[in-house]
Image (tube, rainbow, N blue to C red; front, side, top):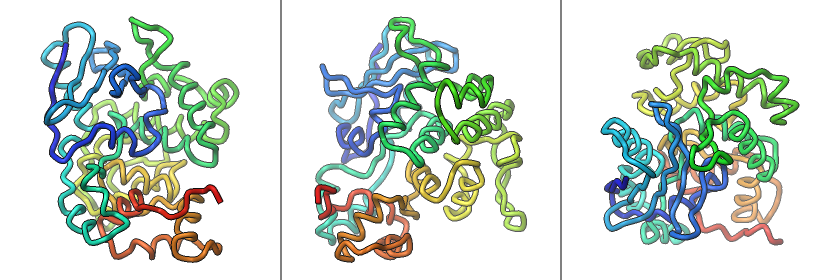
Length: 319
């Protein structure tokens, strides 16, 4: 079955796929034959399908082997729409970027969208697995999680969907440490999975309570966590930032990264690479700290994360 989905212009599938390294993390993949994007996903019905996503005039097409029910079609459209940010509007960012030579390219290249997973649970697990490791280590850990716990694709059992919170919650720390080799991250992803899995009623987030500064109960305590509710939480970004930081294993860099994936760009994801980029751009390669990175993009306001992400950096890491 083939679905066609509209994208708010300007749009470029290759720009989304190339926005960061998520395409290299299972169950994403690139399709060499078409230049498109693939994703193996488990639908609410339990069915595992491979989605082949290609750019077409006005948006993208999504191909799935076999027929889809109306509910499955709606689910595929919703998930792909989120993954590619098809409805996102970057006109305000582009208007500001036109006056900055280092960002003059973003509108022409339709940059701004960041490839994301269908669920914030998947993106949070993957983000935790980027911390304190090499990129090769992240790829290995994600592949191990998916292959060990994800449901296989019937047409090719060597490929698997990303594991559900229930599937991950059913394992234990020893397995995640010794077999999956997640190291110190094992208890973090396990507790996250059990918190999300225990939210069986999928209740919406409680209204923001300024007195208690909380959105939902039990973060960091193993109680129910409606993580997907963060996608539509109608609260200020600084408060959402605090809620992400309350998740064990999510520090400043990870929280800022997740905010970017949620379409909130008020924070810069500062890591060792960001320190190098800003140091060579404005400080002659001298050592700097987080404060200097944040100050460099402070005037970009709600777009500071995107300005950092798509900046035309002079430093390439070669020298």
